[in-house]
Image 1 (cartoon, helix red, strand yellow):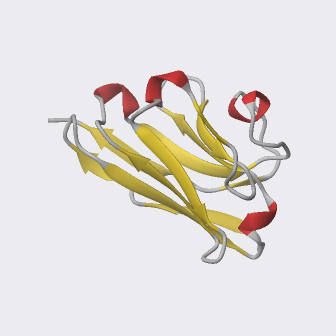
Image 2: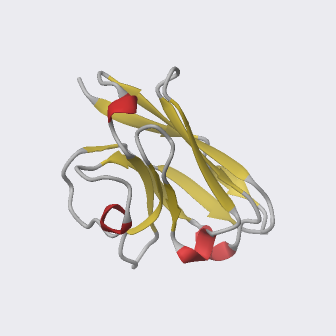
Image 3: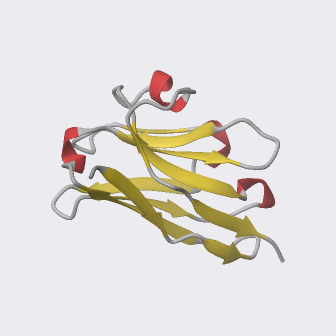
Length: 127
């Protein structure tokens, strides 16, 4: 069975940090560009960041630039998202995904459901 599993979400105060991790089961993560998406109630899903299959390409949506860092360890079959200086507007369910695209603007704007998706992990930012 092929799937992705996210972990690391939780409750954090504004200004705090969290590290999300995405692990693959049943396939080799290193064969894919991987991205993080988020969705909060009443809002459309948005692409947050993506990383190319070798880690050489990294993109971020403007609201998280300078605060979030994506990384991958293909030997461990994982992709992480380090989130610093969290704001209330970062609160959402975060999903990792391997979609049928290279890491680029199309990847971050992807609205479909093709590829592999995790079940999501909740990030709550509140004092």
